[in-house]
Image (cartoon, rainbow, N blue to C red; front, side, top):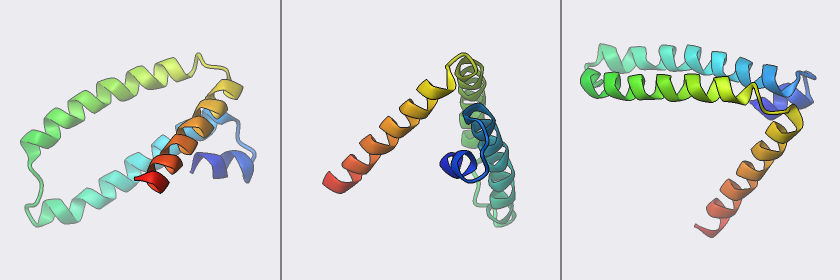
Length: 90
């Protein structure tokens, strides 16, 4: 989503990352409802994982604002290339 927001909508890198996270929150909330209604959520595990991920996400979001946009974009591209290579080789 981030590349699309940057390339097609002209958002700056930091705003695109923030917007992407906001969309993920909405999608995750909507997608858990059917599982929860069928009793297919282990709420204890979900609570522990949620706690850790919230701390990590807050820390990461606080740190990413200190990274210049050009380095953020380069890191994103590098990570994408590494993931593509692992998928091709894997």
